[in-house]
Amino acid sequence: MQIPLALLGIPLRRVEKIAGLALLVGAALALALNQKSFAAKSDPAAAETDAASAKSGAVAGSPAHAYSLAAVHRVNGRQGVCVEGGFYWVSGSTTLTKYDENWNVVAENTDPFKGFELEVNHIGDIDVYQNELYLGVEHFMDGVGKNIQIAVYDGDTLERKRVFPFCGDTGQMECAGIAVDPDSRTVYMVSWIDEESSWYLYMYDLDTGDYKGRLLMDNPPKWLQGVAYYNGSLYVTSDDGDADRDEPDHMYRIDLSADRSFGTVTLERTFDDVIKQGEIEGLSFDPERGQFLMLYNRGARIVLGMPKGFYDGYTEEIHEVYMYDFKEAPRS
Image 1 (cartoon, one colour):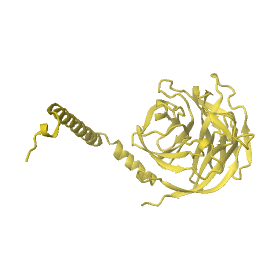
Image 2 (tube, one colour):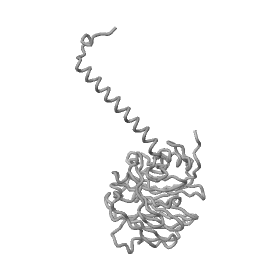
Image 3 (cartoon, one colour):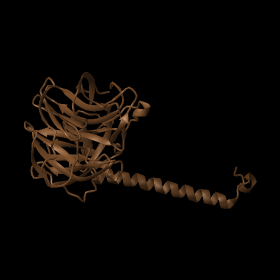
Image 4 (cartoon, one colour):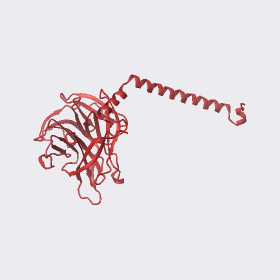
């Protein structure tokens, strides 16, 4: 039996308005679903990303590896770390240091900016490939970066060898870290600044130094600090925890589309096992020893990306490299 709407106290005009709104919402949902379906068919990025996940041994949405803390070493620099051939390199904001396999200092450069034409005062996370160090250098002050450059240094002498030309119209506002992908012959750079600049990784040709384009991350992490390439995927560290609240920072994995234009972001690890929460920095994988390295700072208060005073109980900032044994994560 139909009940007249008037008896229910519902004005006919309101009913017509509600019905019309429902039709509009339904049409919008249908259109969105159709567009998503069409995009999945016409744009193979999702399938390519799944293939990249399979190559890295990762399951989409889950960590690729399990990590077990093996050792912690205090070092001289606060920015980045990389490893190759049994040697370790650490970058400070204005220094480079090389260590042997037992973490003894074997070389140091305390004036790495000598000879630059543009004013620079900051080194971020670094990488090494065939005994050459790759640095993103810039002038950085109170959260603002400029004069960004890609500089290549000798792994033994720690002296500068060459500089890549930087492409200034890409939207990159800062350089927090750099990574070498020998598989696609690509150098990646990440930006720390929490705005559109940090949605992308910026790509340069490893052999020619030419700019290759940008890689867009879905759901990009904030406050990127370092980047590394390993086994088909990129990994980034994010200073997204609040040290004042004892919140940990994180590492994320980026599974890449085949054309390196898009990356799917997955939480890889939460660093709740550090000595004291502070500021996460650079990272590196050592496939020869099955180890993962992460640089972490503690003791200093960080304001706009720069140390500003110390927490209670500290009179200096402490820089440490955490070494983890890692293996492929068990599949559920």
